[in-house]
Amino acid sequence: MNNSMIIGQYVPGTSLIHRLDPRTKILVIFFFVIIVFFANSVWSYSILTAFAIGTALATRVPLSFIVKGLKPVWFLIVFTFLLHLFVSRQGDILFSVLGFPFYEESLIQGGTLSLRFFLLILFTSLLTLTTSPIEITDAIEYLLHPLKKLRFPVHELALMMSISLRFIPTLMQEAEKISKAQASRGVDFRTGSLKDRVSAVIPLLIPLFVSAFKRAEELAMAMEARGYQGGEGRTKIRALLFRKKDYIVFFLFCLIMAATIGTRV
Amino acid sequence: MRTYDITIGSMFVALMAIGANITAIAPFLSVMGVPLTLQTFVAILSGLILGKKRGAFAMFVYTAVGLIGVPVFAGFSGGLGSFVSPTFGFVLSFMGIAYAAGAVIEKRQAFNRYVKASLAGLAVNYLIGVTWLYAALSLWAGEGAGISYTAAWASMLPFLLKDGALAFVAALTAVRLEGSYLRNTRWRQHQKQASST
Image (tube, rainbow over all chains, first blue to last red; front, side, top):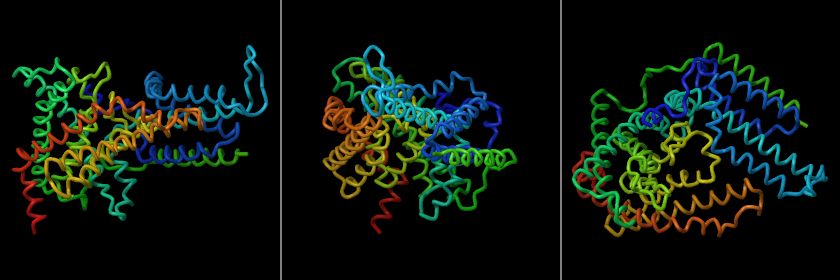
């Protein structure tokens, strides 16, 4: 549990997709999400589907992980399709099964909606499957840099994300320890009415919050003692670098975008 | 932002992750088989203790951490796919909760102010969460084929009792923390000096 808290959905690997710069992956996904809404013909959908499935295969992430990532939305995909099939009745009757008519327009509408949905979820899940949260955080800091002009605290956002990643497992253990310590003092968590149990939360949470505040104070002091004074002029331990493969991926993706727009009707 | 604002904000993000999955640590916190989450509770405290801006920003960071794939949302879920979940509105509402609670408490501090601030947070929670739920359901199901807006509200009403109780406990916790530990921190003393000059 604690391990999964740090790495998230990330599946370590050495495929080309894993080794791409995280900024490349985020940008490609960003434009993919937009381009999916441009597709409106059989060809354009085929190109995007082939591209998404090809990329998914290229990650060499075991299929079971990809399916697991899609699990919460399978229901929505199927549900959208069925609903359009049975509820909305538009277009000509295509065929009927046991006296139940299937309408052409509804079939197409339901099909494209759920395909769109599937493509979006599949492709965006590839980011978190092949990129560790820390890498994504670094990329976000870089990509959102222009927002600094609008006084949005980009550096603080990235720093807070990395600090919280580091402290989630620590505080989790802390909470477990406190819960056991209070139980050994005789706090009864297990019985009683809802009101009793909700108020049993207090001896669990107050020490947890105090411990979190203490850690925050110690960390702030340690950071300032080492000369931290905001993001200005700070250098990075993990520098991001666009390489040849990133440029090739950008080029290929531009071709895909052009092909998708070219095959629209 | 001062360094301490950054570190304490990060701690609130971590506390949110724990609050979302508190039943992993404290399995007794299930109400009739439904695991209780303390996300609203921590979000309210974030607003009460950090103030409206910093509190809301901490919740923004929490949302971002969840969206990049760290399982910090309820039921150890996370990832960009959460965005399409019908209950994602509740995640979005945490920013609003912290802002509302912070805005109420920043004006004046007294025990009943803390309770009012918590209830303001709770109101924002339901308003955003239920509206999103309704919008998501009618979007997937098609116009009119889904449930009505009133039905969406009715489906959430059973949870109101427990959330109301937790909001009250949040106010109580905030008062206790302010009165004991926080009062003596360098951070609060700095803030006091800054506001008195």
